[in-house]
Amino acid sequence: MSSSLLIITFFAAGMLLSWAGWLPSLLADEALTVWLLYALMFTVGLSVGADKRLREILRTLRPSVLLVPLATTIGTFAGVALVSLVLRYSITECLAVGAGFGYYSLSSVFITQYKGAELGTVALLANILRELITLLGAGLMVRYCGKLAPVCAGGCTTTDTTLPVITRFAGKDMVFIAIVHAMVLDLSVPLWVLFFCSF
Image 1: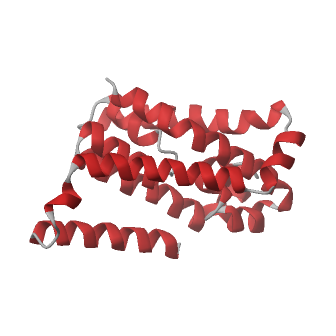
Image 2 (image 1 turned 60 degrees about the horizontal axis):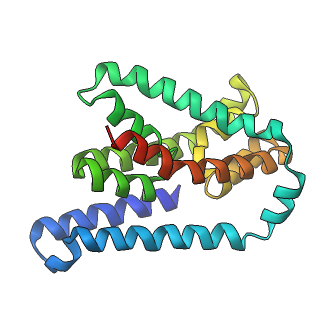
Image 3 (image 1 turned 180 degrees about the horizontal axis):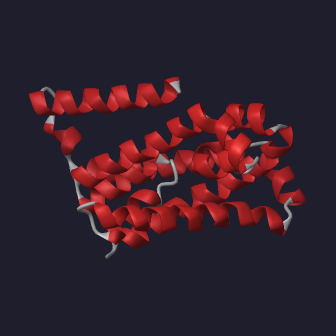
């Protein structure tokens, strides 16, 4: 949870510094944002490739495990489509936000790039909220909805920030599923977000 608060703090600080005009104009340049996004994607690739568990996960992967990220994707899109009925954003904009699956650093940059800062901010806050709900509600999710509920709720965060609470409340047998779940969703985020931003 402290990592989420830290991210919100940095986001707010960046907005305040920008509004006050204390940042060089170079930092607001769209070309720089794109290159920073490429650098982020490169480091994500490095972290996934360097994970010592990756080889073991790929070797022991059962096709049925892939149903969990599929269920998360379908459930997220269905929920977002329903929410879009009461929001002033189009269904594709809402689906782009939902397609972040909790991966706020990546999805919000993409959405800001293609749809503007307002929707990018909505994406950042919505995806941070997804992580916070999982961190605070994992115990209740397991009790009332089953062991897979916090995994699906956590989205992309189930390999890092929400993994400890998932392990605590759902059990150690959920660790493998949570890691595979997050890796599959991590790879799908850019594809889904760019797809929905293209409309």
